[in-house]
Amino acid sequence: MKRFRRLRSGEPIRRLVRETHIDKSDLIYPIFIEEGENIKTPVDSMPGIFRWSIDRLDEILLSVENSKIGGILVFGIPKHKDERGSSAYDKNGITQRAVRYIKSKYPDILIIADVCLCEYTSHGHCGLVCNGEILNDETLPLLAKMAVSLAESGADIIAPSDMMDGRVAYIRKALDESGHVNTPILSYSAKFASGYYSPFRDAADSAPAFSDRKTYQMDYANGREAMGEIAEDISEGADMIMVKPALAYLDLVRMAREKFDLPLAVYNVSGEYAMVKAAAAMGYIDEKKIVLENITAMKRAGADIIITYHALDVCGWLDEEKGGI
Ligand code: PBG
Ligand code: ZN
Image 1 (cartoon, helix red, strand yellow):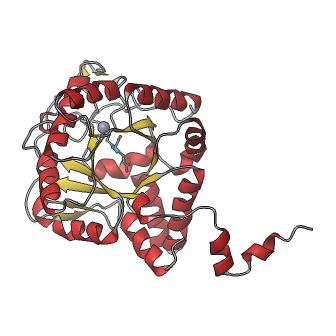
Image 2 (cartoon, helix red, strand yellow):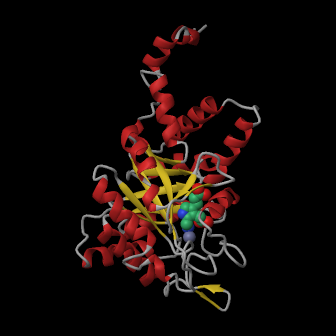
């Protein structure tokens, strides 16, 4: 009989033989930034998450700086929305101003800028709309303008999340031509049309006003197609790739890990966060145990980078565990 239990007899030996570890630097924390003053509004469906105005941001940025996590992902929520999402690529748009502020005051915080129109369009879609159709090629220049203006404002990494075809190549070219040859692209390559995004859409005021996102985000039944999306993004110049959401898609994280050598991110999305928080609030589960198990599973599946609303809590729990997990 093989005695597997020999290596499980206590925490020191379990730690010695543990195959997967979480580093604080693996974690990326999303932050919602709203136009206006003196705002710290809780997001109802995401307990512990707030919408911040720039003048109140220090509170959360100091926690981020002290936590030693890998970086932040910024989402701007503008006051002005129109059909073309013009505040997405306005030099003085909320996201541009926020990025400039963060970069000037916290130069050591790595800033990833989400590039997509849905928070900025009156119709809430990720691209331009004409007769109820979401236009692909006509959207690309706007995404490129947004990417360049965010790089100009100080974003360290550009992360397109719109799922238009050809956007990585288009954005790469625009970044290069505007002198941002060294700004990497983290592409939301395999992003699925998912029910798990609904708390985010409340948080960012970005729910589509009609129809859904199924003509551009992927069908969750399709794994092989996801590998095709990732391969295409790499050939278009993506520096890092992503699978989103995380937990129901760990098979694809593993598949992508085996097929591609680029740094691989997963997005542990708002609905995944909301479910854990709700069950924990009811006393049905132990939040710390569940979150550490989930995050470890994402890494074990092959993720290098984990975008999660739990990031700051995870750091605190890793400190509690001393040697880490
Ligand atoms: C913007 C965007 C979304 C998310 C990240 N970027 C929303 C969407 O596609 O509807 C979802 C993140 C989350 O649910 O936590 N396109
Ligand atoms: Zn979008």
